[in-house]
Amino acid sequence: MTDDPRATAHCMYDAFNTRDYPAAHDIFAPDFYSHPLQATGPQSVIDAWQRLHRAFPDAHVVIERMIAETDCIAVHSTVHCIPGQQPPTMLEMFTVRNGRITELWGLSNLRRHT
Image 1 (cartoon, rainbow, N blue to C red):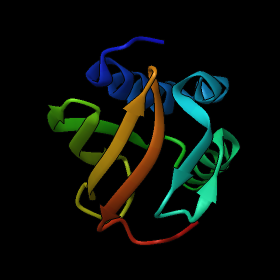
Image 2: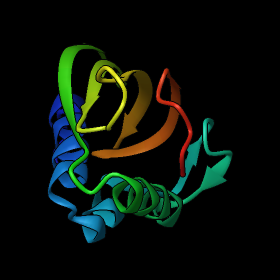
Image 3: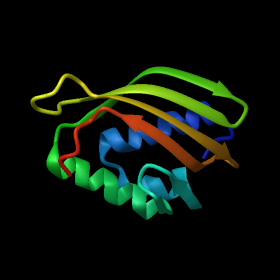
Image 4: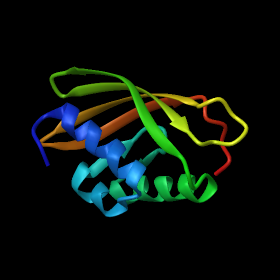
């Protein structure tokens, strides 16, 4: 991984978009905590990504804006190829330490189908 938090963020979205699930183990810290999922560890991310891709096989995220301040990243993105919806918007904030995401908060207007 990299020490650049912005690069880590790009790695996360690239892994989601390319279905590179094993990369989550390098992107997320072993003790990673997701507030939206109320879950811990990289496997919780892999499980969530796989559920979304099963429901929407062509889904992919486009980064619209990214703001970085030291170890905190804020990303505004859209999720494309979700049938019946305008591209849902997400706002995610996460902390990066030692090149890995350690904690994530998020808001989305993606309707829950998974």
